[in-house]
Image (tube, rainbow, N blue to C red; front, side, top):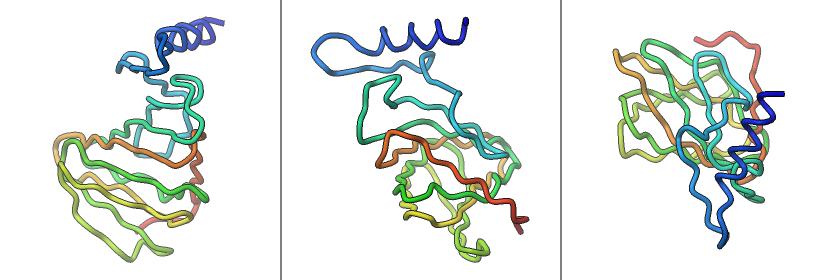
Length: 145
C-alpha cells in the first residue's frame, strides 16, 4: 500500500495547473522494466507526467559493467550521454560497436538488439527518450560476447 501512496504523491506533485509538469529526481520511478547490468528510472510517463506519446528516463550503467542484450520492440529510442565514457554494441550478434562520451546522441531503431558497456571506473548516466509512453524492454536470453 505504501508504494501506491508514494506513486499518488508523485502524480500530485507532477501535475501543477497549466499543463507543464516538472518531475524532480526524487520523483523518478524505478518500477520500470529493467535489464541486467543497468538501472532504469522513469521520469516522464503516463503516471508521472500524463504523457501520451513519449516516455523518458535515466539509465545508469555501473562501472565495469555490460548490460544484457535487449531491444525495445517497435519503439524508436534516443539516448543522450550525460556522463561517463562508455560503448554501445548493436546488431543480431552485437557485431557493431561505437564509443560514446558526454554530449553524444545515440539513435536506436525499432527491434535492434543492443548492449550498453561501461569499462570505466565511474558510472555512466544516459537520458533515454522513446516514442511511446510505455517503456517496452525485451531482454534477450542469448549470451553476449
